[in-house]
Length: 54
Image 1 (cartoon, rainbow, N blue to C red):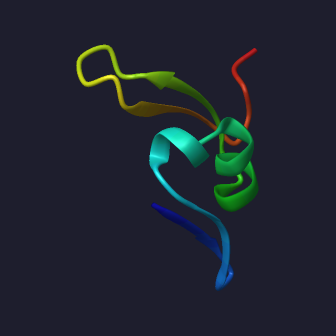
Image 2: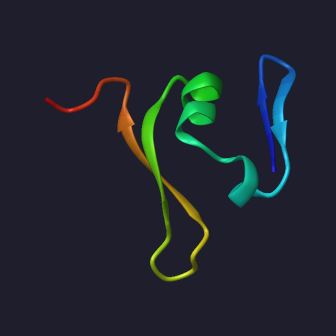
Image 3: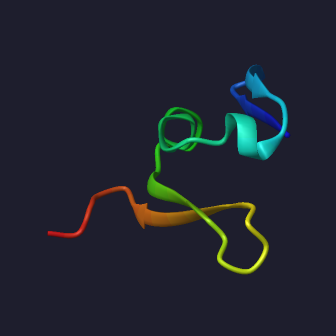
């Protein structure tokens, strides 16, 4: 996986190694939670949108 924002590679590697809530926020401006998919065990991004629910 390569995370790219404005033509700059922020991170590169296996999703399990690089995918984080901070990376998603930095690259996409999106609040989320990263959890292990209960079926596959791979990283799963749960988006909250641009604002966290109150």
